[in-house]
Image (cartoon, rainbow, N blue to C red; front, side, top):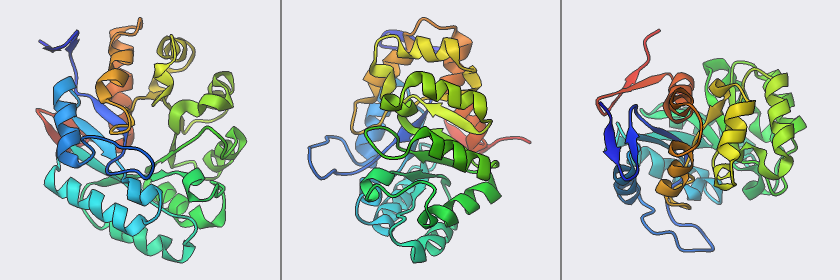
Length: 270
């Protein structure tokens, strides 16, 4: 028996694979701390969110990652930490990665090359991150669109680090949906993160009908965007319920190596 929220019946846990936290430099964001975000997640039925801090993807990776670590400690069954690496400080990357993953609750990386000076995703400043992700079979969520890296760059790092999973943030958007779909055909470890793209008319149906549904994930971009708006694009999409479950839960749970059982994050059984 599912739980009925406004306009839909929830039949499985929901993981938000792309969320942030905190203030941002050039516009106001309400409910931007952990408690404010979780209140909105509760209102629409989101169980768990993968978060990185705006401080990390902008000016201060250590400060941002510390704020995420604190939030995850306080809400261990609601939030999963994604460690941010700033490639402009390559000498600190290895120690910052060790610090993040030496604490409970971190299960992946988030990078935003454009906010770090349009640094190339395959540049040496990211090497420590890619090597760690590859060695530990971790996901790397990278922003894409409005400049930044081309899909060929994503394809190159996917080929080089085959045990890492790459979430193509926002599914490429202005890089071309057809091109992003073709990238899936040429790789085995790239998934399309549909954050933001699902706002476009019929985008969810297009991707669900064209791509292997095990290669699609969902995220809200909260607190930039209210999660209910973005979640609604999936739960009300004209696609099979099994595909919705894959997008909203199963694919992220598989990559993160977790299960969500009665509101508790558990390690996935091997």
